[in-house]
Amino acid sequence: EELGVEPRILPCGNVAEEDEDREPDLFSGHHADAVPGARPHGYMRLPRRERHALRKLLAAMHEVASKRGPVLEQLDIRLDPIPDAPSRDDDSDFSDDESCHGPRPHCPAYFNSYSNGKCAVRTEIGPRGEVPPLPAGVHGFVRDGGAPLWTLLCKGPGAPVLLHYANCGFEAWRGKYELICGGHGTEDGAFSTTREGIAEMRSHIAARQLTLRGQEEDLIRFYRTFVLGDEFDEMAYLAQFGLVLRLKAPKARLEAIR
Image (cartoon, rainbow, N blue to C red; front, side, top):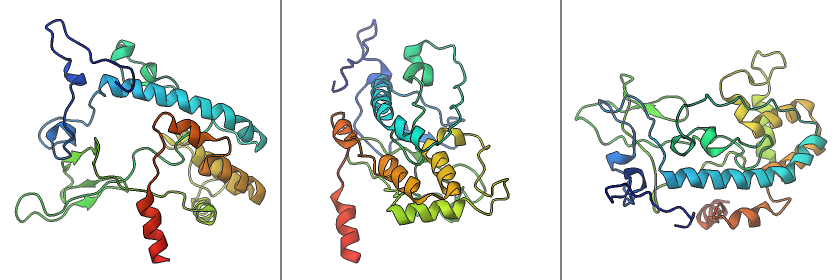
């Protein structure tokens, strides 16, 4: 209702399954992204209201990008176009690719890192005697033998969230990119730009270019514009759409340990 999208009513009078309101339950199988012995893959179509929310998010991102774009040009940052999403035969209202949501902006406008986030694992559940799971990269876990675990998406009010501070202060941000922009065996020594999906990490690629260039003033200007993200009053604009959340607990915890 907040998005101005009414549930779709079927000819029989029932609400379409994808538009049904469900009580948030983290441990419900409905939220399972990978269930051993069940769905062979993690794809689940987004509810219609969530697809409309993504359209609104993209519209806000394009507005932000229009303000930040000139800074990107003045810093002489060259970003390759984002590859087109594979075409689908589905009707646009029943598709989850960019034909449904629209193209993302060329200029970094919202996420500075990546959207797949971090993952927590519970080790005290499972068959008796089973050894603990193993990390599979930095974004997930698998069983000791490599089989998938139950993966539950954190959805709804009150669901737990892992706060991942990817850019915690200018010095930390600069130090991170100085570290990952050397010793990789590539032509310029920085991390590879050829792996799948890397072109979509716009801010990541821009920071790479600036780090290799080594101009302090350019690094500071990029950080203020694209990481702090409020040079053009973006926070007030995004807050109108509920896209800004003030978290007081992390600040209090950091102040307590300093």
